[in-house]
Amino acid sequence: MTGFRATVLTLYPEMFPGPLGISLAGKALAEGAWSLETVQIRDYATDKHRMVDDTPAGGGAGMVMKPDVLGRAVDQVADERPKLFMSPRGKPLTQARVRELAAGPGAILLCGRFEGVDERLIEGRNFEEVSIGDYILSGGETAAIVVLDAIVRLLPGVMGNALSGETESFETGLLEHPHYTKPQEWEGRRIPDVLLSGNHGAIDKWRRAAAERLTRERRPDLWDKKNR
Image (cartoon, rainbow, N blue to C red; front, top):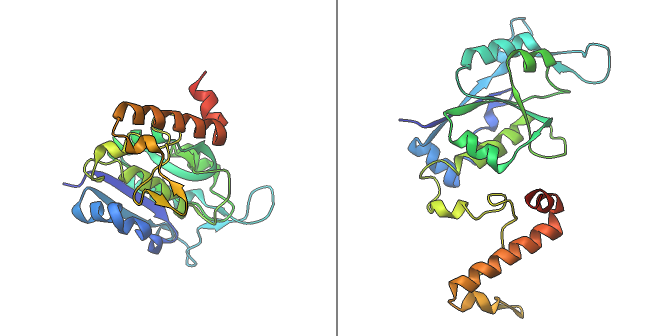
């Protein structure tokens, strides 16, 4: 029986599964650990031209996706799953939120295009706006793929070693420590001696210190938040 169920509402269903069809996510999809359904929004337009957008109220550049068309598409698939709208003005996605979503039944993801989506649709269908960063994409599809990739890798059995996800960046409030592997020396750069010592207590201490240093240097916002 399929676990996590993802439904993506989009004008470009051919973009899926895309990267989600290979590697860990693709294997999990093939094995039924999760399912992916795409819905072509344009199928819910009722005029002869199958219009999904119109000019913005109040004037301005671009076009806005219509609430009536989107509403019909959403209502066709709506259930108990959270509804996510990929939006640069949304709340930034966090690893904590990803874990919450991974523990649930699935998600319905709406991918916008043009200048955006009519606000009444967002409010009327109780969408959670989600941002993957402070930049603008051509559409929400790429963001939806990012969100689903982050979720799927946390589903039971997807990662070969479940513990591998517990020390990654953001799981502990810190960035992840550096990693090394053979050869012991490469282009004059050696693996830190402590990692070759076999002293697991010393190794854990080094990794913790390295993670703290990187977080202070690269993400002072995370460091401040952790130490409030």
